[in-house]
Structure formats: structure tokens, C-alpha cells
Length: 461
Image (cartoon, rainbow, N blue to C red; front, side, top):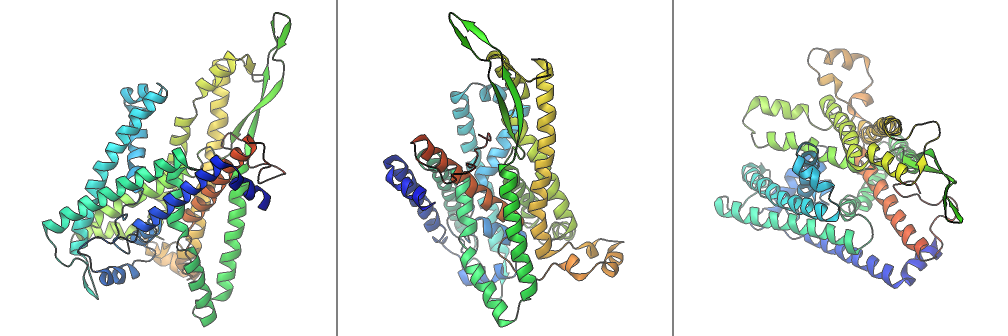
């Protein structure tokens, strides 16, 4: 491992990419400490202290604490992710965008430009909503906004929109000139930045006796098991045998070899979880703008972290985005046509439509298994931390409160930093980052990180 890392820094091009990636991440973290003008920071932090485990605490984690500091990068990368989701949905239903997606690099550039425009529009809408929300919130330390009014709203919209666009640009720069997927690395940096302080705080509470040491150890062991399970699932793939027919061209014989088509058990990676995490925040964000409407606040309480409706909606969104994302990146008809063009076929399957149907069946089964795996890994740690408030269900709550143990309803009572979504994203991003480093090293004839059983790329190779 140490020799492999030294190889990374001995390669000039790879060294430049690594340094560039680290510098961009430093700039990203620096922007999360630039506070918006007109904000009472003490009141803001006092308000968020009581929002742990809520949607605001979740957003604060994904923005690396920018929300708690009312920073320039409060919106983070979420507007870009939301715009990407909308564009991918429109690509399926809008023939114009569907044609662009099939036009190669030029079409992708046009779609990327539309995604950027969408990011600006979404950022303006979200920043204006945040400015109004900030003006309405008060805490024990006073109002969050020192001088509310249209001046504050205008400055907030300009600042947050500029910050969101700049973060989008940083992510694209990492993807093009650095190592790894820029958007994923920015989310990774936002999540792990508070990991060490959270661990120190948890250990301190255990020493002081304010936390249950047995429950903390159980949760820590469970997290390690989940990490090992995630690594195993991300490296697993289904090998579909492919046979190439022999072709005689002149005096040479081409083809005739046997190989396989690798399909990942989790074809979508962590993208469905990121998409679902973004979408599940939308209802609570909208409902929070109407604090005086009782039925909206009742519905918002039902969508809080730990509530049954929250888990149900989250699982459904993960499964939906898993199938949706795989349907975009994998086209069974194109895979079948490519095999036929190069003289390949799947043994026992007729080329053409039958091969496409077989590939579609395999992808459907793999996607279903992968979506369930993502849902379980995302929800189980959250369940241990917050439980599932079945006792809050109208009509049947008393039944569950009487027969179910307290830890099922309220969790283990441990304020651990990582939830299931954060853990899955962190592990997935680290594996993707190492895979790309592995590719650079192997391409330049260096020994990779894993001498036995190399880390496979998304195609399983």
C-alpha cells in the first residue's frame, strides 16, 4: 500500500491531479466558513442545536456545517444534483433531449449546459426561500437576521446562488482535471469533515457516563460490519458468458475466444441514494415555509427523521431511482447490437431481440437486489440511531407502544455522527476514488493498491 502511494506521487501527471484535487477541496472547505452578511451566528447555531436528527441537521451534515454557519456554500452541491435529476427525467419523456443524449459528446455538452442553467434557477428559488425562512426563525439568542427586509433577501439570493454555481464549477473541475468524481468527492468532504470531532465527542460522553458504553460498542461493531458488507456488494458482479465466432480474413483467423460480460450487482452505485436523499428533503423544505399552517406542520412532523412515513418514502425513492438510473446507463438493445456487430453471442441465446430480453431480465434482477441492498444499508443504521416511531401512528400507536421494546421505537439513544446514507456515500466514494487511482497506476505499469484481486471498476473489469 505504501509503495503504491509512493507510485502515485512519482508520476508527474497523477501528482498534478492529486494536488489539484486537494486544492479544490481546500477551497471548497474555505468557502463553508465565509458567513453571509446580516446573520446572527449565535442565534443560528443555537437554533440548529435543537434540530439534530431533523431534516435541517441532515442538510447541515451534507453541506459540511455550512448551514450552521450560514455560509456562502450553504446550498452546496444539492441544486446541481436536483437539476441533474430533473434533466435525466426529462431525457426520458422529452424526445428532443433524448435525441441529444444519443448524439455523443456534442449532445452531452448541450445537456450539461441546460443542467447548469437549471442549477442557477433552482439556486435562486432555494436561496430566496432560505432568506424568508431565516427572517422568520428565532431562538433563545434572538432573531437569526439582524436587519430583515428586501435588502437582506437580495444579498442572500446573490450570495447563495453564486456559491452554488461556484461549487458546481469546482466539482466539474475535479472530474476533468483531478482524480475521482467531483460531485461525489465534494459530498464526501462535507460528510467526513466532522467525523473526528464527532468521534472525540462520543468517546468523551462515554467516559463521562452520559452514553451507554454497551450500546455504543454494539453500534460501532455494526458500522464495521456494514462497511465490510458494502465493500463486498460493491465489488460483486454477475458474469454473463460471451462467445465470439471465428472469422477468416485472408490467412488470419479472428475471434473464437470466450469471455464474459460483467454486470455489477449494484449497477447504480451510490447515485440512487444521493438522488433519494435530495428528493426526500423537498417536502419538508417546502412545508417549513408555512409554520402557521397546522395541517402542513402535522404532515412535516410525519416526514421527520425516524418516522414511519419518512422510512417508507425514502425506501421507495431509492428503489425508484435505482431502476431509473440503470435504465439510463444500460440499454439492453444497444448491448445486444454491439455484441452482434463484433460477432459475439451469449451461448444458448439467439442474437438480437432474444439476447436483449435476456440482458434486460438479468439487469432487472440485479437492480432489484441492488436497490434492496441500498435501502437496507441506508435505513438500518438510522433505525438503530433513531428507531421507528410506530407509537406515533394514529389508531395503532398504543398497540406498538405496549408490545415493542423501547429501543425499537426510540433507537439506542446514541447521537452518532454517521447515519446509513452518509456511511454508504463515504464508502462508495472512497472505493470509486481508489478504483480510479488503481486505473492510473496500472495504465502506467505500476503495481496497484490490491496485488490480489484488484479493485474492479464500474464495469467489473
